[in-house]
Length: 250
Image: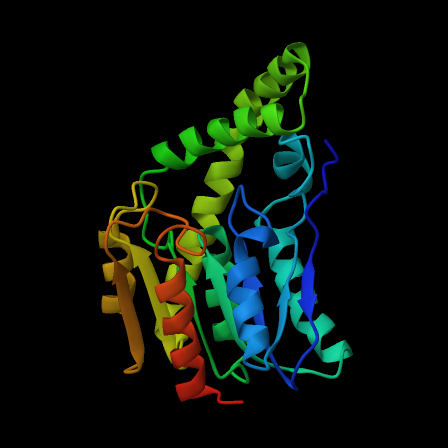
């Protein structure tokens, strides 16, 4: 079986650009359906690959990636779409990506709107995130047909590095929540009602903390964490398109 490794995705369409940031154990492929539909609506769309992601060694996420580097990746995404002659108008982030999408909106008031899907802001318990990382390790091992001995070696490294990595993400999350009062743009919050990775109450707290009046808060029934690919996907795409039409237009 030929394995195609994930990479950054760019749809070159109209002059207005939307940036999509993926999750901790995800890749831009999790944003593909949303990006494709935004492109059909004549938005240019860029979904960058965060450093450390998309390889056959899960340890790369822990060794090559960290919040400071992912912050740089977000800034580089803004620069990239500008280098293509596009104007970045909106940014959205899934799970981990929500942290950096929110930071972008605070730091770059020229962005007209943005939002989050399955946002971990105000999450205090990372137990399920930790478990999800080990599930991803197992899945990658099967997908790339990695020998059991090599998988075990990776698991041992993950045991050593993951606690510190999650602490760094928690600190980045805390820093971002402290900036919420500075956010002025219209903000979209999408969350699966059956999300066990990040409880709904975390998303509700984000809505309560935001000073902006134009908050579009959407709960998707019977949907889990990754609402860009699960049964919430079609409704989410429709909701995001409507949100962009209202606040950006084409």
